[in-house]
Amino acid sequence: MNNKNLLIFILMTGVFGILNTEMGFIGILPYIAERYGVTVVHAGLLISLFALGVAIAGPTMPLFFSRFNRKSVMLLVLGLFTVCNVISVFAGDFNLLLAVRVLPAFFHPVYCSMAFTVAAMIAGEKDAPKAVAKINIGVSAGMVAGVPVSNFLAENISLSASMAFFAVVTFLVFLATWFFVPSMPPAERMTYGSQLRVLKKPMLWASVVAVIFLNGSVFGVFNYMAEYLGNVAGLAPSLVSATLFVYGVCNIFGSMIAGRLLTQNPLGTVKLFPFAVGLVYLPFLSGGHAPAMTALLVVLWGLLGGVNANINQFWIFRAAPEAPDFANGLFLTAANLGCMAGTAFSGVFIEAMGTQFVFLGGLAFAALAAATVWGQSCRPAMNPLGGAAAGVNG
Image 1 (spheres, helix red, strand yellow):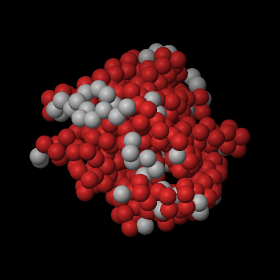
Image 2 (image 1 turned 90 degrees about the horizontal axis):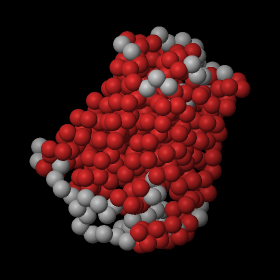
Image 3 (image 1 turned 90 degrees about the vertical axis):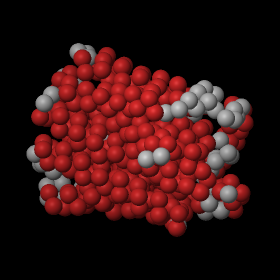
């Protein structure tokens, strides 16, 4: 493995560690609710407030840290995640757990935005899409390992062992970064003002809104998936872990498929995506007690989840490629705002109608995503792939 591939691999693993910490809590929400004596929806604050922290920090933190040595920033973020994960293992109070859960969320977009930017930079213009796809595979891998492994460890060992898993992963990436990543001072310092000027582009704001709805349509439902599989589909705990693992594996394949789709027909892919999500969600409303149908739908949903991650980053980055760090930060903000809003909105259906109807929240967000994307694509001046945007695409 040459130095370039090793660096991209470490970045991919680092993103895996960060996303593993973020998403892994999805697999253990029922266990957290039981330990701390709160409802599953209340325990969902660990997901939604983390997402809110990322959303708040997305536009500002990557911009602020863009002037510092990238290796030092990576070590800072990975070290903070490790310390907070260790505290989580021993937290005896839900509010303390919530506090050490939310704090590192503000540094999440710093590392992830930097990973996308550095991977594209070291790969070169020709191979940048492939390098970015590898970082997105790290995101998907965080779901492959994070959600099912945390669920498995909580069920078979303890909740503490499950949360210790997060700390071990981020610490190992910290060591790899310390020993193998070279010093990376910024070669060219873009002023804050030059990056902030992209906010004047209506196309960028329309893309942000679209990504909020797109991500909310997927993660507003997925964040309650462990609860759905156990209480509605009636799967045994071991099968819940296995099903979540299958979903994550399908995410990786979805990321691979997305790279090809976004290269061959990007606009068509984005426009049809919300309808594909809706077609998967509708059978869930009536198929919760049919394990075979549930398994098939999870596979399809997992593939769409991988496609979704790539669409989100692509749709915003292509609207403001002249400010890559800032654009990637906005992508993370929009994606996590969608996660937060979708989780809260779907939670309303759970409390009012029962867990099975969580998919109504996802359907509503998919409909809003379709309306936003189609409305944006029908206006040439705001279309990231045509008209006035052609000069941006390069």
